[in-house]
Length: 183
Image (cartoon, rainbow, N blue to C red; front, side, top):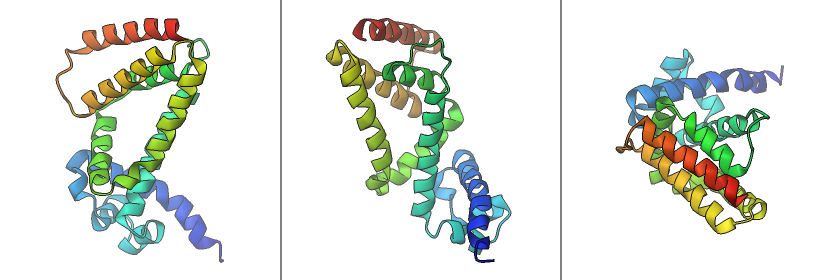
């Protein structure tokens, strides 16, 4: 029986994270509380705390889950796609949904209070920049494109005017051309 808490954790963590995401997207990060998560997940408050003893631990897990989803998207790109690091970022940006945006905003709101929560994201982006520098024939242009993509992502995240889908499609096509030239 000593394995039961660990099994409970494995079974409950996805439900808890899904409940926290649902609340963050639907109601905003201010409403993500242990009590609200317990209600949403159909668990006791103790069950939530057993898996995530603090809200910080929960937010860390949500960020890691988002990063895992991004990594999975990159790993599952069609083999026909040119898979430079820049192209991976472009393709994942194109699959960015409004619920991703809402959840990202929720995590950024928490990270504004505890900036060190973004350390795993910083690590991933550092690795991507290193790959971009080593894989490119024109690292300077490749870095410009990378930061342009990040700017577009955060522009979408903040729901700032973007000129619409046609403008974003034109930008994406131009970034693809420039990526082809830089790699």
